[in-house]
Length: 306
Image 1 (cartoon, helix red, strand yellow):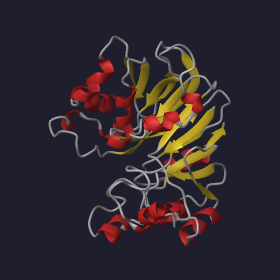
Image 2 (tube, rainbow, N blue to C red):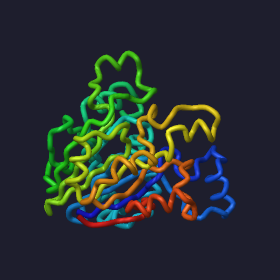
Image 3 (cartoon, rainbow, N blue to C red):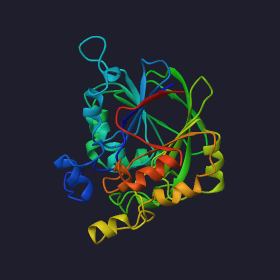
Image 4 (cartoon, rainbow, N blue to C red):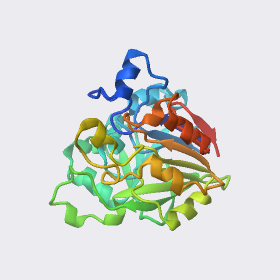
């Protein structure tokens, strides 16, 4: 299975359009020892021909154009993107689906609660249902393995299993809808297994780390893990207001470095990195601490095989 990191930043990207924090300001002026990043987006393929997206970021169009493997290959209208897997209903995780509205057949794998939020509460997503079989919604339940299928139902050979990580739905979800939603489907991580039998753990939003998660991580070959904030009060200190990292559903890196220090098997990569996170500064002490602990910090355009 080939894994491509199309984007590695948290919501808003880096630099964020309305932010003049030290990181964003220095990057815009050319004085920052680090790279710009688009919003987190992963693409996986077992054969190099049919690709599945993990999430659908608002930067998806630009990410596709920057990735030749995702360009049309045959005829006037065609795409190697066969489908997507959605982990939550956050805007920066699903908005990219609307960029794929040009009548291209797709299969979207997601939990029933997330599907209902998008298709029953948001009229804009009707753009994905203008013709029969434009998007085929395939439901899964956390904890149950399922195959990644293309729009016609062919098996890609890749297997996926969702882990329930949190119970909080996005603020935009209507109060009318909330009683119908299943808490365990609100925020999910993914375990992917290609035909090789190796395992990828994709965890872009992790509110807490328990023994069950540690067991899952230790059995993975590559761990893509939540690197959103460095400290719990990061946004409050920089902006003067806001929520803590954990209130937003993220274990800060300063804590996860300690909690995951015992992991030995997986290659460990932080992604979904907020523009305020000091570890983006390649000359800073936080960057050095992460690298000395055996972690990597994802960049747009990285790829690897499992």
